[in-house]
Image (cartoon, rainbow, N blue to C red; front, side, top):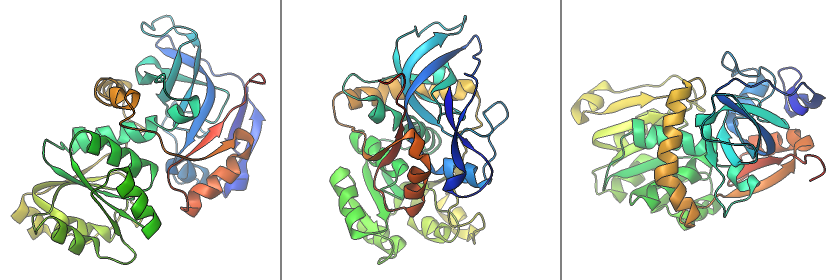
Amino acid sequence: MKAIIITQPGGPEVLQIEVRPTPAYQPYEVLIKVHAAGINRPDIYQRKGNYPPPQGAPQDIPGLEIAGVIAEVGSEVTRWKIGDKVCALVMGGGYAEYCNVPEGQCLPVPDNLTFIEAASLPETFFTVWSNVFDRGQLKNNETLLVHGGSSGIGIAAIQMANALGHTVYVTAGSDEKCRFCEELGASKAINYKTENFADAIKQLTNGKGVDVILDMIGGDYTTGNLKSLAEEGRLVLINTMNGKDAQVDLSIVMRKRLTITGSMLRSREIAFKAAIARSLEKIIWPLIVSGKIKPVINKVFPAKEAAEAHKLMESSEHVGKIVLEFIIDGS
């Protein structure tokens, strides 16, 4: 098979096409003929040498989400058969013509979506469900603040929470991105370059604050996050783009009875990811089928242009997901 590999840590130019053996698959796995693969920020970190893949994952082929057709099934696979159209969360190896994945991490491609659209879903939807609804315990009538509202994670969080009846606030880096987020379902988008988000949240919530914050920024955002949380609020961290060190006023945590938590999904066990997939299929997939939640694709690149896709991701100029398309057998 052809794969996009990281030849050495570095810039986008280190991504090159190589011919590799088609991956072997375990009895509990399926082998997917990949039609499309989503681009995510962890792919950038891995390419730079800052995010080593977990043990057992391909070490030099990035890619955390794919969509395609099942080509082979392991002897212990019970749900899927050859020819089924699926999208899947994978530990790595998604930038390739074939990828193996545990059957529980696969979801059916909704009939109203293309492979490209389906490939944009798993990494962000698994992440949001696990962190906002499972770990963050967002409940009925509670409010959510999402930093990076126009990112893939932000778009998924806005749509999922809004469709389930929650008020969603977001931050974004331009007035254009803010308008986009509000059109998508955010009650209010705050331009963090011109406004103090903590002051804005205080005003928007009449001083109460929000119940859950999904934060991929970290660093100096932490002070504002704690100020922005309501009593019994939960801060859920999924990245530290502004740095891993933060100044924390512990008296606020105690006074408001706050919870500060976080997670990394990639290295979690198969059963954990399979449980998220079941929740998504039961609760979120019908909303995708009905059109209440829609994939937002910014740009599609042929797989051979993976370096250009990474350049766009790093520019942060995009709104929505970036996807690689694999042309397989001329189709």
